[in-house]
Image (cartoon, rainbow, N blue to C red):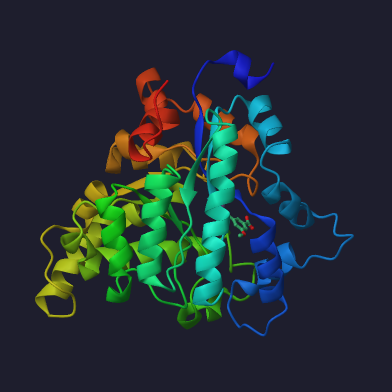
Length: 348
Ligand code: 1WB
Ligand code: MN
């Protein structure tokens, strides 16, 4: 029996990837470039795959580009009401500033058209080009005010730099003023820490992605970004990339680092910024034990359901959230209530 018929729940999935032909073509050019970035392994496999590639990797690009056929069918078959769409990693962050800025507009326009055709099935996180922070802030305003999109996607570092860098403050200020959450999605670890991730398949989802984004989140916290932008909201996937598992030690050791002058003085403890400025999603991390820890550490209000389509299958993600031992009220929050609040999606 289809899950949809078993339980009537509004399932909003919050880390669901897509691409557009223009970005895919530009990434194919990146795949053929001499870049040493650790992302190249995946970029080559997905965007410059041999024509006869019948592996799961070979099937990814058509699924990323398909927004209204196979994707809607997959959602219907699994009782998924809505995908919160985001341009897939590495987004526009491997292009030069002008190209990245132009392609962000193209991707946002295309996504907004699809949402307009299916307003009950799709919402979307807007892309922007961090390479040009002032133009990024402009595109953010357009995305929220004109395209009515729901927040932003950032694929972690840009040219190995992180959001604690003051050059990025113009768009952090914009995101805060727009009351729009920035979802920090993984890409492969930045150049300076790439070496131990180059073998054993550690570059991407197995391990490198989590280390990259957790490091990004911790850099933002300990640098004082959230004292400067106290209302800024950041979302991180994969059950919070384990950052909140470190809460106690972060608090303890950050105090030491402050006292010896290695870290700036902060108004709050790291764990307090985690609760105030972050939400997490369950994308591709279907562990009841990790979910239980997360809701206890961060509050059930701060945990949102996600699939990680098309990189992870939908059915187990639905079975996971349908069956975890939480109350009905908590399941409603995890499945849709929190997503509606954080990403300004109209409740039904
Ligand atoms: C994978 C996962 C590859 C994600 C990706 O390429 C992204 C993977 C951009 O499982 O290999 C993802 O978004 O989680
Ligand atoms: Mn993902």
